[in-house]
Length: 260
Image (cartoon, rainbow, N blue to C red; front, side):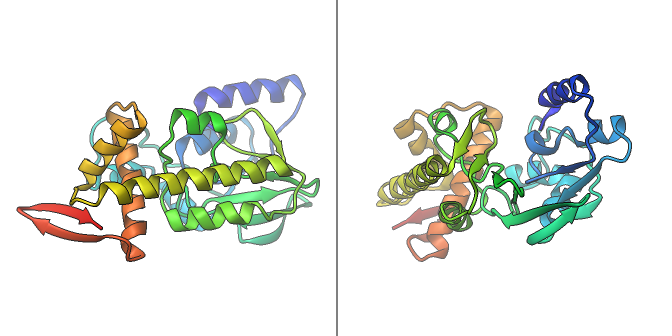
């Protein structure tokens, strides 16, 4: 959660006389963990849990902007220089926190080691492992770190034994059939962009050329930060295609081209 949603959550806690004992971060993006420090400062004893690799990014937030910039971050991309403290690491499988049994599942793809949580009541928290219809309509090019892991995760989600599902950036609680349908829509959207890129690469294009063409084809609206997010996403799509032998590359006159 970010700062604005943090205060809304805190208002609900205060109104109901609740004291949070722990926070589980699905991944290290600031819109999902930026409120940690607030709760740690205002609720003594509140502990934070995450996976190992996400912990590294939470403790070194500048790494996100460095990835987007492929070097020292451009001004405006480094949204926070504050490190977040993580108390405990979670391992996959059944774990116990404060006498509460939880199942930790791997949801890699959107980020390097995103996790999900299934509660004893069969409620599954999925983080940003898939995107709502509204998000896909607004930002159709998905921001993904690893396309292959994302596809594996989306197929895995369709098999999760839970009754209700909660995802990021949506106020809706999904039932099992609905989450299966949404996972399939996310898969179709990823495959659409893979096919778009393959069609574009019937002629040699640079990574920036690919993004330019995708923006025109899909009416992608971008400012400075969104451009870099989308360019990073394009890199993930290209690396997936390249690593799976679907495209080739060459360097000419100091410019890297990809082609079928």
